[in-house]
Amino acid sequence: MRFLFYTHSLVSDWNHGNAHFLRGIMRELIRRGHEAVALEPGDSWSRRNLIVDQGNGAIAAFRKAFPDLRVGIYGTDFEHEAAACEADMVIVHEWTDPALVAELGRIRLKGGRFTLAFHDTHHRAVSAERDIARLDLSGYDFVLAFGEALRERYLQAGWGRHVHTWHEAADTSLFHPMPEVEKRGELIWIGNWGDDERSSEIMSFLVEPAKKLKLRTTVRGVRYPKAALRALRSAKIDYGGWLANAAVPRAFAEHRVTVHIPRRPYVEALPGIPTIRVFEALACGIPLISAPWTDAEGLFRPGKDFCLAKDGKEMTRLLRQLLAEPDFAAEMTACGLETVRARHTCSHRVDELLAIVASYRPRSGARQIISEEVEV
Image (tube, rainbow, N blue to C red):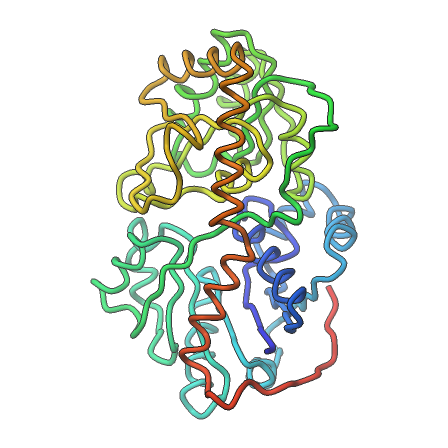
């Protein structure tokens, strides 16, 4: 089959975690003999910010890290109908321009032979409900929602005819333990400050425990305001800015423990949806302690695959315990790794995707189409 992904960006993961997952999904599809092409807009916010922050070298680094991924850049004069009609399966991410979301639906309704899906990996369905409600999904065959709570929200609101839960996962060809790497520090957190959705939680569950325990701590991510940077400096935390996702496994390997600090909308309105970093961290074999988060769907084994801290005081205690008891840390690492490998890899998600797609595709099989390759 030929898959076409409309993305906000595949090239850039600057404040754009969905790129991690789609890269892994495309690589797995290609490994299985399918075609996979991504399209992203020429004015992608994430890619523009990446270039401003890091220069064009970051784009070259993407090409080097993912030489098998095909990405096209589209502008106002791009022929979307021609591109979509060459595909068997078109998956449109929710950050795609609403006018284009509607256009692709109209192309499908007027006779496009491709199957069309809408892919939501954010919390706007509850935090910016009007934005999602305005989207025209009438031409879409189904919706892929990255958690059961989000799927239920779509169904309750009547957005889309069919909605399937499709969680994110770890690309284990990239995210895996690296025991040969020497430890440089104790605690690492890789996450963006964002839009004040977890500001107090970052202070309570990261900055204050690290300061109290005097841990050698590293923070990587973007959009940290001046006040946040001052707090990190005061706690003697090393802030390194943006880190390419391809470099994250080594960063995890260089540290002894990490934390999960979910954004407030996921905790309060969309329980059961972890950040993709949970999957990736556990796949790398680093012990993880989470701030309060409800695993409503039973994705993991809380207390076994990772620790849960109800407040900053307990986070401090658990950090101290994990760092002082290597056997405890090793057992948790093994359990988390076991769960990811058994249930939460991009290979598992491709299995799920293909099963969903098969129920919408003609039984005669997909067309085999060879098209010209597009380049970034």
